[in-house]
Image (cartoon, rainbow, N blue to C red; front, side):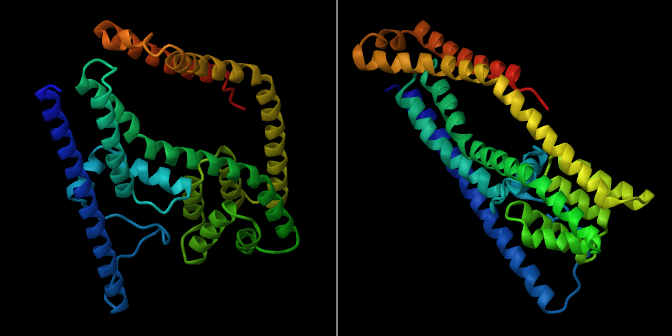
Length: 323
């Protein structure tokens, strides 16, 4: 193995370990500061008043690794994604997991330099494996938001029936949080607790919309705030909104059935080249080794992989019809 490749691997590996160690030290320092704040509160010392009573606020002037993440605007984005996914991670933990996941990709890239030279292959494989924790968070977020969207019409009907029975809006929120299953019940409990602990209703609803970034939730928030300013029958508004949401679900199901052929085509066109390559490796192991060993062949393989990814992306963009 060339000396340059070994040196590059050692340097990248050392930088990755340094990033992980800095992240772990930051997590430890953050925990110590949280414990110190709890002790100050228990001792009766004054604490800063915050408008959002259920959201953990970051220091005004972050330092160190957190300041670097804030400067890249990744810290806030990661915090929102983790919160919407329903995970109890911190952004620093996500960054540490991505850094650790990069190490196997760097080793695979050096052992199998199929994309250009060994350094470029290590970078490509490292980025691919390092993005797996972030993709996991995105997958959990999409699954949770789909569950929230499915539960939301029933929650609106529950709110409307409760208000028709004579309950106040805040009491109806508490009843929805207790009766609805998670994850929507958890979000309504957080909404009720914020409002019950003194946060204004408009701020609590905005936080609810930020935690659940769905179009239906924005309609619900706008309806409640508009009714608060102008008056009107809120229970009737919520009932009609639940009916509109269910009709949109029905239309979305029809669109999904009509686009099933396009989704099947995208799956077949994406998996067929991969399956063909695996079959060739089993039937004729030496057939593709010549291409992998040739410098131009490596670029052709890399171009084929990129073309497959772009083709799948554009097909999904075409068949993804917004309703």
